[in-house]
Length: 249
Ligand code: BGC
Image (tube, rainbow, N blue to C red; front, side):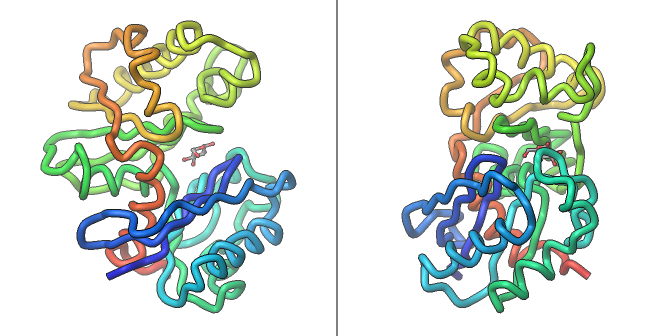
């Protein structure tokens, strides 16, 4: 079945149709910059724009960059604070007139990687880390998602959360080289390793495609590999979640 998957990030909102049996995108990705306000109404309008672009009617899966419990935003992350406690599932379903399933964006990316990608069949504890505006994390035990792990929220030095120091947005904001940023990212991974003791870490999000530029900085013991789905994983996993995840309410 073809389902519209939408990956919502702090800087871009991306959609594509996805074959949920093979996990392949059947259209090109359509990207709209996230409205600078990052507020509910403006972002809902972009969801509608993406639906119209594909002239789509059917279930939609959305990866959303905050904690999402039963379709509700439980911590606005890098979005506008007015998202807190908004029922995203209802807002997007009402705006589009279509059924929308919403899960955390890193959970969605992990879901794609574990079901269609490099994580398929991997046993034990696998952590998916997405590198973008924030640092997202998706946890899988023997292939089963444990939702809403928020490893990017670990406080670090003077920062309220380590993603402010080690996400791709910090690299861009401070104009860091891959080498300098890679050391920070390795520090983040070393904390992930201490806290979760994973068997494997898989990287996704925009920066995963440049892995060879900073791989030498990654010195932790746990194996770290980039997802071959790169930043398409969020779209693919969101689409799959629309069919396979438990209903929102
Ligand atoms: C949010 C996470 C999200 C990550 C990546 C963080 O700021 O707290 O929920 O997965 O950004 O978008």
